Image (cartoon, rainbow, N blue to C red; front, side, top):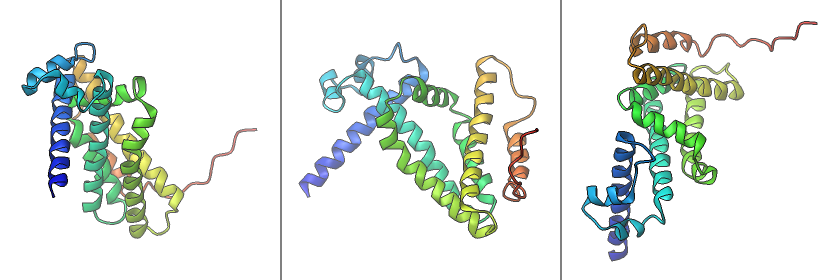
Length: 212
């Protein structure tokens, strides 16, 4: 019992450090990020940070990986609440946009960091399990509501729903960073995307042939 309480305190303390790290990274920059700043914000000594993280880079990696995995869990919850059939695709896209539309700084950090500075092994171990669970849930619910869709096509449609969300939030991020805005609201674009997924992506088409 004591061991369980100790483990819970360990997890809570580590989570608090990661949460503060994410806040500081989102409000500043990776170059300005220091363990001294984290310790000051938490009211602890820097050795207390080293108890959980070997160095600054390991903490940044944990903060970014945690955020990326969090969005996948948000999508998974939305997908599980959605009806079977094409509605699950709309739910995944909408959940992604709603999750990031008011936290664009976190979106920039998580998606840029994972491509430029990410540790592939850490990313795979932390993110792939929940992303794979998300895809399997979407595939199962989509096919239950639209049995004619093959498993392979359901997986492709799941990826398209996710990348639609990434694309729309990227557009929001770019215009926000440049002090401009999109021609229409995010909700208007989500409504258009919803029509594209209304029948599970439309009838399957045979692969196009190259012109002779």
